[in-house]
Image 1 (cartoon, rainbow, N blue to C red):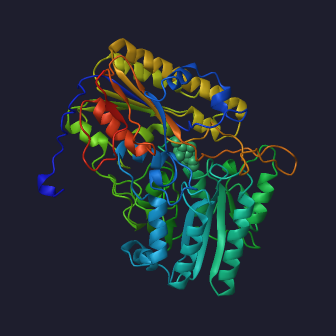
Image 2: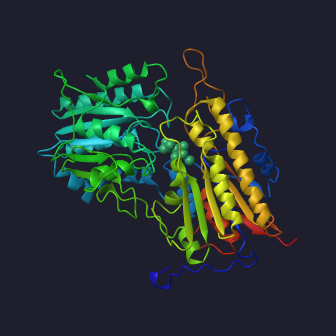
Image 3: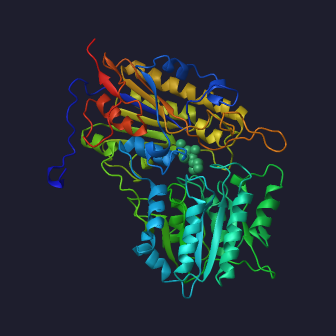
Length: 559
Ligand SMILES: O=C(O)[C@@H](CO)OP(=O)(O)O
Ligand SMILES: [Mn+2]
Ligand SMILES: [Mn+2]
């Protein structure tokens, strides 16, 4: 399509009417898996979702939510919120950050770009700091990419390198941090043999240090800043391996929540504070949990916490994390250019939109949904409501989270008749699933199901339509399994709890009194994935989807 003949105007759907209130409900971390005691969705009372499933195959089906269906490098890559909501909102499959970084590293293009050149300017006199999530989870970052970057930077003149690690345990098994630190320590020792002064300088668990999101709790970022930039932390160790082993031995310790630590020399002096003249790369490719640190590293004017020092550094992100804010301004790899998202089209076609979640997932139905773009397309047509999340807790303590509050907001928005689309994310299955607490996750799934019920009841009242789906799996499988699907046991004979997302497909259900007779799921899109949902939603608003969108999942048959 040439830019001259481009139009935001969507063609009318030949059969489906406009003007029906449409609820789009995304259950975060709600996949479909076989029914056993580790499937919390199965164990929980979920009468609403169960009744939707009765509509199969015409009104309920499964869609793919992992791997290449959402633009990830391989079919072994579990789904995640960023790629899931990107696909749901954009209606097309983009090579995502993980893959783009792989390509840039494999071709060496990463080193030819403006971002790396900017970083390299500090290599003679300064230190190169690499900050990010240390695991092979592939959701926010990947160890092999860090390894390649270390190699590439050292071959291109970096003489002094400091890695600031964030331990995972959320996209990978809890306890795996020890192995990842060992691997990295070995790599850095090899660099030292080559005369490069390379070390781990600081660390902490991702959920307690640095990787907050959507400004839920700036204290998390501050803890990281103190360790990474100021070289100050409540714990000092001589090595990172000693640090994670020792801190993990505390009661109730977990990789996700390790306290911040710095590595010091024999005199107790931290190895790697960030100072004037240094270069910094945040090596996560995923946006949401690096945006806050990116602001702290980049913005001259900043009042979220006292930075104490604001070093003059050359900072680049692995990717640009926010396309609207252009943050960070320097980056090593260009992000996927996710344009012409369904949200933008619908606004241009007078579809009034309401979007809501609680803080920890708020950006999922706004920022991710709109292609990693913050803010409104058109303030007069859209309203985004954020319900403050609890902060400073792990969500197994309050597994109901704000499900009722989100559902109430959605209900009120639907009943107000001011909106054509009411879109929500219900976080429970995912956020509680990540804690690995099975009892709490069962409570979480029930709460999410009750919230769906409230929203569907409101749709019933206004004669509307609903689309209920999910972004990827999590709560439907809480245990690590062997190839035969049997739970794996650890050395002590206990099942290995799975805190991560899964490779499972997710359900999608359509219905409501406003759904035109004869609308049903097509049979000829058997491999349909999340990217097929946008065209489906556009149809239900009475429009044809743009021709380059992934095909719709529905058809209208004459009864
Ligand atoms: O919490 C997160 O950052 C990820 C897991 O790493 O979960 P989600 O993709 O569901 O946001
Ligand atoms: Mn998610
Ligand atoms: Mn998750």
